[in-house]
Image (tube, rainbow, N blue to C red):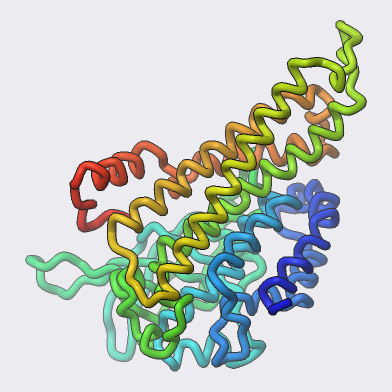
Length: 391
């Protein structure tokens, strides 16, 4: 058993505890310290750290499974902790000084990350001055740093600003109490602000270089894992919590239906043909969804191991795959939660929490079905994806 497989085994053992802690985490608006410490103990945060820094640098198919297994325990934990694990991969794209800083202490970092650019960055001697507000700082309460994007102007009005990716120590931020939500509350995805914060040059790189695998870190980290485009890498992890939630609901609701009796009909649900057919169909849909999830991750890994570069049409396909998996997972969760009946709506039931969290997560822009379908459908008809497409 290699390090990646051992990590997945350790994560599976955590699933019951994650379900048990779900309500308390939601009420606290943050992941429990017990969960964070367990993840540290099993070295989960080293999963994608480069081997040169003592990390596991696991095979790519392991990474979506990390999110998926955590998602079987708690959707919010999977989203929050999954990305804190994943963001170590982004640090591998920075220059050597930055990587030494991020990985040179305990061997990993815990960093929140926000995708959409905001604020403003002004170039000064030795670095940049950052000002502005960024939203969705998932896991910020647990972090050392936060990664964020901001435009940098050249000073020439005729030139478009260049998007840069920075990482900034958490103590430089003001954390705003904005995450007042009906679901995914335990992620603690508050807004943050920076006011005249200096960021040294080594903590920056352009967004385009990260997206197109031309960033300074690619000359240092040369294994196949680092040949996977950043967006492809990210979306496979991002859909893992949805897959895990669907699997968790299938398990829990199946158990309920074994003993559930209709309140007005008196029918034992276990004996109803309609319930049996429903579960059979949902099981097949779930198997098809998880099969696609696993198959496409393996395809990406096989491609980069052969030394091939993913083309823009392939990157579009993978975004479509993830949008489809999210959609199917959400549909399965929704139907299963309905089948559970009223007993799944009590606050101490994980069912209602999985249902609410999946409903909320399904609205995330990363799964946007129509937009991605338009791009991918175009490639099937010979139309090149737009130059600025998030693929």
